[in-house]
Length: 247
Ligand SMILES: [Zn+2]
Image (cartoon, rainbow, N blue to C red; front, top):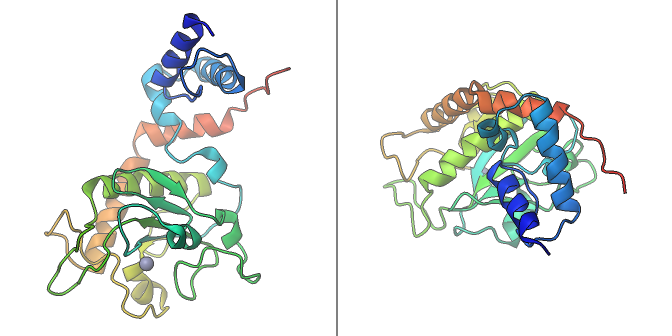
């Protein structure tokens, strides 16, 4: 262990790269992060962009496959993902914005005939990525009561970033039929959903009411994020293919 190596790890992390913990040990993660830094430097990506270019969804959560749409939910549970949540959604966003990976891969929803897929939306799971905010247990729509675990502004903020990254990676255009909340599925896609109201209310924003209003707000914010250089720069990261380190 050396102080120089832990300083290197700290500086790599400040660039948004993942060298593992600052333990002073020059292991495979640290070595990979050094190669990542060189790749980005050679590609001319300026340091402040690197952090954003990494994206917030770990790349191993994003298998190459063809997906048609992203459906956004809440879990109707507490602020932390539980075992039922991970069985039903691909990505869960907790109250502080932390991402939790579901037990089924996004690719499991390409074909749902085998019964092994994230079942998040009735009759509409094929080709659908399910993202969910961990919140809204015992909430009541009318008169609105968000319950003990209201949706946080942080969750909503992270949601639009996650959806923008998914749109970018899977080439999904932002339209009411392709980026929507569960509450919009019945009307927009014609698949009955037994009164699901995620989202017709936003606990942190009482001025936005209604499925279309909440969905439009989400789509506007996703579109805005897709136009920012950070998401465009993510393409640099995915197209650059780092040389595997030689042993
Ligand atoms: Zn739902």
